[in-house]
Amino acid sequence: MGKPPKRRVQGGRVTAKGTTPESTRYTPPGVYSQQKVSPGWVPVLMFGLLGIGVVIILANYVGFVPGDTSNWYLLLGLGFILSGIITATQFH
View 1 (cartoon, helix red, strand yellow):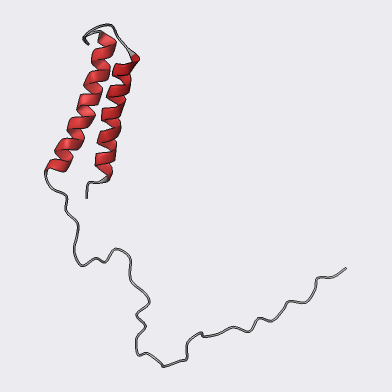
View 2 (cartoon, rainbow, N blue to C red):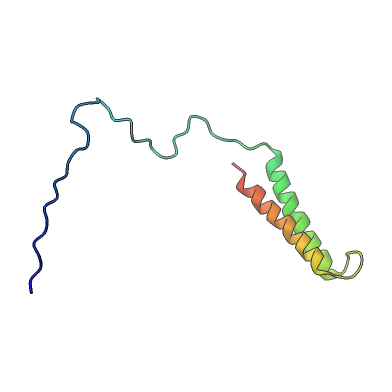
C-alpha cells in the first residue's frame, strides 16, 4: 500500500503586490518610545517587606514573639514575604 499523492496547495500573497511602499505591520520587539521608570520607594518597600517577613519568621522560631510560638506568626511573615515578591514584579 503506497502513500497517497501530496495535495498541491494554492497559496500566495494575501495583498496585492505594490499596494503600499512599506508595510507597517511589523514592529520590532523592545522598541518603546519611553522607558518605564519606577519611583525610588519601590525597591525600598520591596526589601523592607522581605526583611520584615524574614525577621518575623526568625523571631517566631527563636521565641521572641509575644505569647507562645504560633503558626499565625509564620503566616504573617509569609504574607510580608509574598507582598515583597509582588512588589518586586512591579519594579522596572
